[in-house]
Length: 267
Image 1 (cartoon, rainbow, N blue to C red):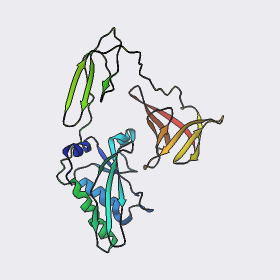
Image 2 (cartoon, rainbow, N blue to C red):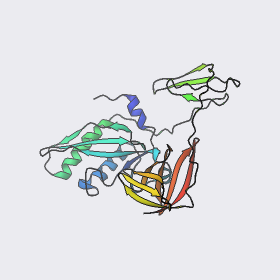
Image 3 (tube, rainbow, N blue to C red):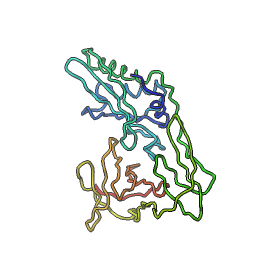
Image 4 (cartoon, rainbow, N blue to C red):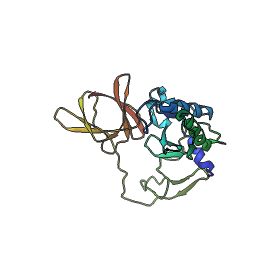
């Protein structure tokens, strides 16, 4: 299989590789020393690999700096088969390796051989972390569209609309005069603070719901593959709830600005 440079290039957007100490396929930590081996092999390839319970401070604040790796175990009675899958903070699949196989009878040796073959998918990769940069425009504030989602601005101000074609191979910009429209971009705001309120966590499928003393459901927490890190389901808000130093925090974006609130949650 030949992977394009654009696929490899996506990996440069991420500063960390997060390695679980217990993969979904197993009931115990580091079974067959898979976690230890995968972290070591990523480090050999030049990646900054960390365990899921030892996250650096910047990664704890911004989960999207890292890719979470999962080991898919497709082994049969006569063959050990492994695939590594890397996903971003919204669970989108970014990279999948080829299947590594081994027919060695000893489990530890078999998984070592199969995983090393899976890592062959990274051969020739020149990984180098490159922080994403925001595109700045010197004219009046405008809306950037990545496809054909062109939004009109106030006709009186008459700024130029910029349409960006954002692909690794081609970065192009096109200016055009906006057409008048009554369309207004919807703004999503939190509109309430949870800081001083005691919330009770009630188990639901795939997570918890936070209930106040009314009782009223205030927010839903959706489980992730990282312990004590939850995605939130709240009026279209994009954010996470996570635990740091035995305290719970809500982190979310509002108007392009990251905000943090401490939560008082009783499980």
